[in-house]
Image (cartoon, rainbow, N blue to C red; front, side):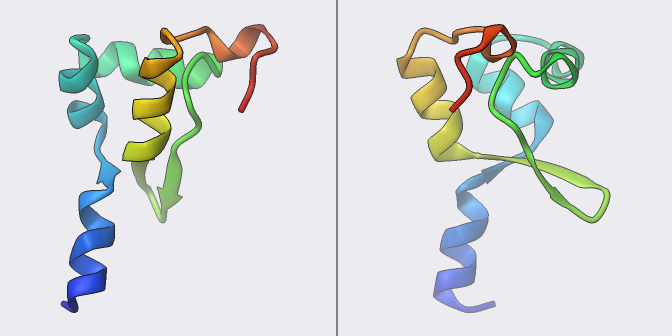
Length: 72
């Protein structure tokens, strides 16, 4: 794997990673994603990943419920 590929991988988070960052259970992350309440994940085949930058910006904004019209 190239350096750039390794760097890109570190910027993608799994559902448990997002749960740990936010202090919530992975199932809560899944429910919030299904409702559209948090940043949309990236789908890599069947794998679900979140961009670190999107999650950090969402947290900095106070974790607004994005399903209520404040979409990015």
